[in-house]
Image 1 (cartoon, rainbow, N blue to C red):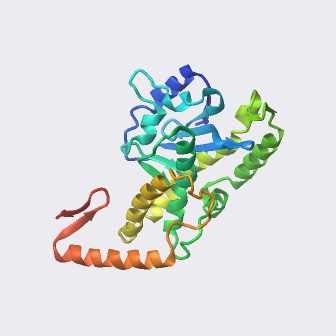
Image 2 (cartoon, one colour):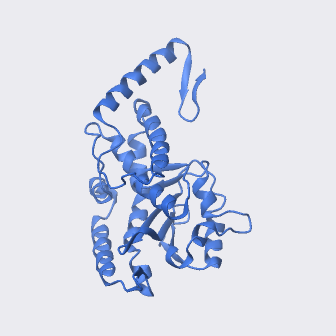
Length: 277
């Protein structure tokens, strides 16, 4: 099935997009998204690209044109991207939650919940060396069995060419005409890769022995989202959130909890914590 791409740059097209996204209140991941900024306005979101796996459809949200309306416009059911992003019951997948959370909060004071981070999933799935974060391109190359790396490289090359040709007026970034869509090719390729990367890492983290990392992912993402709301937060740091000392302490604590849990006849539910068997 061919990928359907829609440019969303009017209130009407925002509402049409929301009608498709509405009703996706599921723990299964169906919404994958990325945000990006113009080169000359790195502190302002210019595009938000959303991919719906179930519809094999991508929405290129022109934030430059829509402004806050991109996220605050509601459909007839009262659903907006603001409410979708903040809904913990709607699973949403990103790559590098630090960057996404910081950009959304800095630009529009938007909060995130129900987020799964492919970058952190890759880190957690490693047998060793969990200190440095991988780039998206490295993840794609590493899991290249089912991914066309040539398409990724070409999309990246074209996006860089287009970005260098972008026109600006009055000192502010302005993506115009076909440049608007072409400059989003990188994000389109990125979000189209995320479902396959997500599935690969989810499978690696699914065995019972990986429960520690599934729990660590959940609470680390919540912590990073809150930290991203502070102005001093560093989103470009390649260091992961888990130091060697932290990992050793977390593993020891987890093993103690498992033993205590078993002794008292309790089980650990990943969503709600400890509960009786």
